[in-house]
Image (tube, rainbow, N blue to C red; front, side):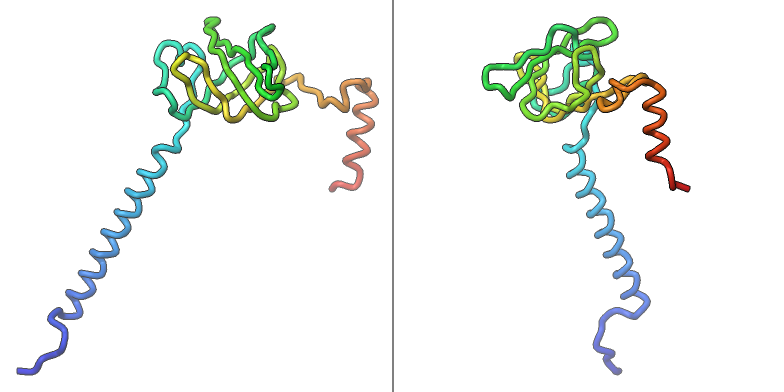
Length: 160
């Protein structure tokens, strides 16, 4: 009897390698899914947040309209507070510290990324301002329609 040095035949060695690779691939997928489950950011409308609020501290997005007359700057000078309203006039108070987007004004659409506090205030880490279909850049607001068209034509000259 001769000993080949390996207790497994080459066919069985390949099978073991394939099974190990499959187990490693499944483990990597499960690990990635577990890591991403905390990164998921659910979207809530004000009425949904009022009726079925997320867990305190859970990262979510709140979307709605900035209530007219509710925007105010707090004492520290960098924190703003405002209300987000929904379709049925639900109101969620929001607080944000940071740089406010240029398009952020009362009566405009907003998506706030952050978490709900125990007192019902939504603390935003990021604000995304939305504009309507009638948006005109600040630079073009003072121009007539004819002047804006000429400017647009000048910027597209030479573009194939």
